[in-house]
Length: 206
Ligand SMILES: Cc1cc2nc3c(=O)[nH]c(=O)nc-3n(C[C@H](O)[C@H](O)[C@H](O)COP(=O)(O)O)c2cc1C
Image 1 (tube, rainbow, N blue to C red):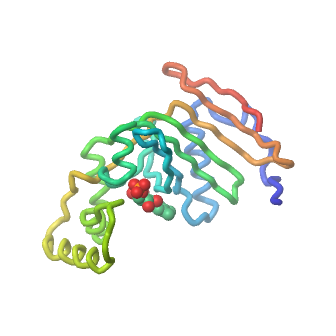
Image 2 (image 1 turned 90 degrees about the vertical axis):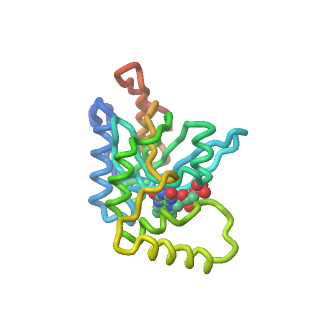
């Protein structure tokens, strides 16, 4: 059983009053820690019937105080978010013995932002996003490979346009929890709860 003893205690006075600034601080620590995917986060959504589903996506920056990621709007997660625009996110930075949990409302990011991000990606990724009907059943891999080649040929010598069915979401946080491992499973947990235009901080039992 791993003992979490890497960190000094997480005191109330060690964190910033603004949880977004505190998140950026921890993300910078994660980025400096040679992790494989420091921006990977689990994203939980809920179906219209209340069944949860979970998958990993990449965090692509803060936008107006919310956490952004990019995906296919017609994917399973896209359908679920259309029906119930609420989500939970979890980062787990194993080497740092730290977890961050976020819950909130979900909106689409402005189209210009999706366009800018889409076109910042390598052409192969643009072709993939344009072509893949994410979450649909595919009879054979070869069929997708042929469609990818067709997209490449269709837009030969041109930009791949941002498709209507692809873009970003922003999770506007209602709560953000910072979790840090301590010995004997007696971990530190600091929970920020939105209170109007400000944040209230509470300590939770481990
Ligand atoms: C490390 C990692 C990063 C990923 N990043 C993304 C991402 O940023 N956007 C995305 O749509 N899928 C990403 N995926 C794939 C998703 O986990 C998932 O397979 C896909 O989005 C389909 O999910 P859905 O069917 O629930 O909509 C990533 C997977 C892994 C393992």
